[in-house]
Length: 152
Image (tube, rainbow, N blue to C red; front, side, top):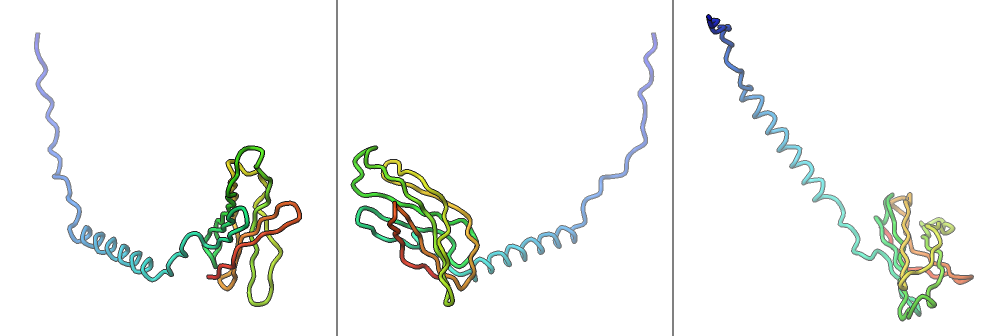
C-alpha cells in the first residue's frame, strides 16, 4: 500500500494591507461629518418646554404638545380632576387650532374618545408654517375649551 505524496500548491502573494493614506482620509471625513452634525445641533433653536400649551379648566387640564412652528406629530391630552369612577367618564373631542397674523383656522380634530381613568390622549400629524401659532381644542357637547396659544 502506498500513500500519495502531499500536494504542493504555488505560494500565494502576501495579503495586501489597505493603504494607510486611505485610512487617514476616511478618519478625517468621519471626524468632519461628526463636527458638522454637532455644529448643526448646537445652532438649532431650543425645543419648547413641555407642555407646549396647557389650559386649566374647572375640572381638569387640557394640553397640546408638539414642535411649534414646524410640521410634526402633535398630541392633545385632557386629564380630569376628581373623576371618581367609570360613571364619571365623559366623551370628548380633541384637536388643535392654528393662526397667523392674517387668519385663524377652523379647528382640526384628532378624534373623539371616552376618558379612561379620567384621562384621554389623542395624536395626529399637523402641517404648520413657521409663522403660525397653535393651541389645543377640546369639545364636550356644545362647549368648546381651548389652551393658550403657543408660537414658534
